[in-house]
Length: 375
Image (tube, rainbow, N blue to C red; front, side, top):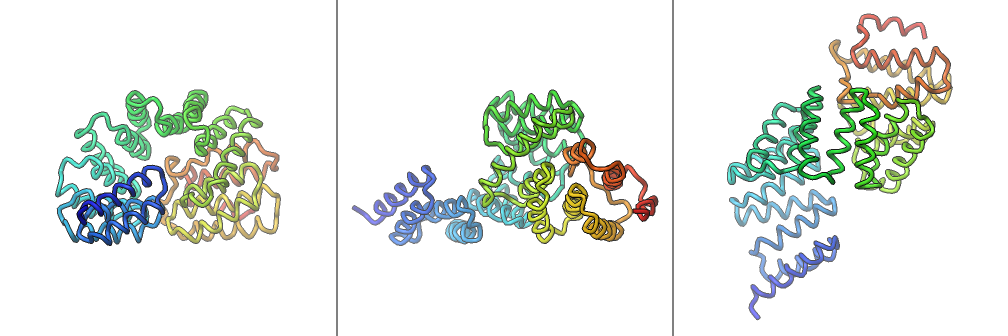
């Protein structure tokens, strides 16, 4: 048996374990293949992918770079490195890798889509659409590209066009829970809650443990006055997220916190909200989180903490640019508006919180902020 065949056998064994999701065991096999033949590309690339799936992105990057050192023209390795950088939220560096992959292989549809996703996370939605269009040009049946294009159109406020993209994705794959959920989200924004609920139910039929779809369904149920069923949905979403808390990203944890506030588990919600404040400098995220913290104290009828948090919220808001506003596509507040409106709080509290939401969304002139000093 040759050295090459020994290395290939360990690599193949690692691949079998990789496909079974046994990434740590797969890595041991790839390490043996690498030790036998350090110049082979695939054991290094595959180890990088296994590390990536273990969320060890910095380590994964090192192995993708080892592959690139051996073969700088290997487009797939550049794409893999980009994905790891993307998960570290290093979007500009990730796009450099995707651009390199595209330069090496202009028909590399995954690199085009991944670049679009990075652009989406940078909130460059028009550019996202261009990348998705290129992916669709290369493969019109690529479901993920239609979904991502729909997401960008939604964020641009082009709701009907977004729904068309989700419908196209559903036509290609009727079991795409993401397409059903995202279509429901747009319908919810358009106040078409009955239709939205049908979409969320379809997503949950496909994947009953889809936490976001449970929360979204709860928002629509609450909007049409079905408060008891809405609370069941929020609690289902909460339980699923708490079960998988170690795998949740930043926004998933904020969504978990918001749902905890919606069911009046305010102290639990604040734990995640206050942690989230230290993880982002984004003004939209900061405003949304700070408003949730403020709302949680109001919903608890805690006058001392209400006054403190209200003052803190206004202090933060005053330091933002005068044209600042939170578009509903970024943070729609729909569920929280329903909780506030339909809750047991006094009229003054409801009036104050709902007007603050209007202020954040640009529905109240900033110059009228002095009205809130009467609190």
